[in-house]
Length: 84
Image (cartoon, rainbow, N blue to C red):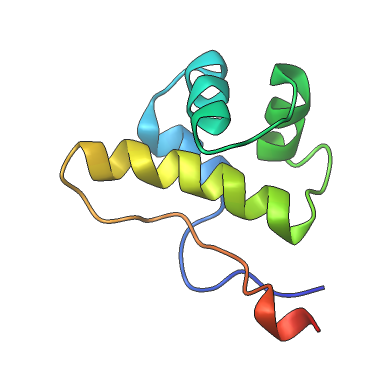
């Protein structure tokens, strides 16, 4: 298991964004995500643990929300290159 690079958690990013889970799910799909809406919510809430790839897709969807607002990307990514 790899650690999250510096940045906030998925749950903290979701809370800060103020988005609905449906909005996040639509953004997740736009970055090539394939999770169902409830599965995505369970990952963000920490009820399920996403693998590094899924974590990074959710983080990307959240961070693109912040980038659209002209802000930095606050949600941390996992370094999947060091997992090998």
